[in-house]
Length: 214
Length: 156
Image (tube, rainbow over all chains, first blue to last red; front, side, top):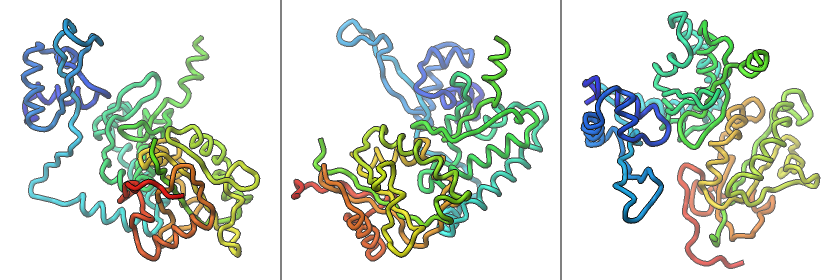
């Protein structure tokens, strides 16, 4: 389904955009015609990877308001592909349960920070945090000067063990930034929105630097 | 308006006295976190001690000066869940082991109360005892398996 480059591009665009996406915006983002975008978007809906909603963009209703537009967003269900079958989610759940019961939050955070830092050190020196986080599935997007993450890679576990798993995730991102050459001025903090990852990022001295420029 | 509201109790044993450097960050965060609760959607009430700012002056176990209680009432499970896990409160929650002992047994419980009811320390501690003795059920449950509010009208 996602082997087709245009379709993969459309999926990436819709999944990485907070809120719903219309056909025109999706077509423009990928650089294809509206009708071709509509064809592929509907294929992605059929496959269960996207969800669709109808909405009147004009804000009017009743006769003369026009046809409601089809709006797309990433489906809430999870699709995991593993060949041969593996059950890391079940193992992850059990491990989290035991770590939680044992009260090992601090140890888990330290391990996540170390792993993040080691991983950041292996990344090409020029890589920006945005790209590095995107490659790890966080689906980053800019919200003013704040970098927010539209996807939580640990969603199911974070729902069941929020304090434990969100703490681990924050420590992992902090470690990643510490390991990245281009991550040194960045600061990650717990700043949850209703959806997505609970961590947001900012360039630590963005406001100071901007103030100096003025 | 619902006939029932959701009551919540949490107990915990701090690793050092409230005035100690080890607890300083926790104490420093309290006003902000409590203010956040007070203006959170669906917040109804929270238990406070004689000082009126928070409940850190209450000692539900007389003989244990490190044992704290936290109790509040909300309009729904979702409202409490959003505050607990989808607000800045999560920042403090993720650091719980820096300040609180790990408790092997249940340390929190949820239950439904008639709207307008304000649970006292004894009632809240009874719910902790209930969930420890009987496991999760309609009279004391957790976020993992929430029970719906009673369907009958409350009798006060």
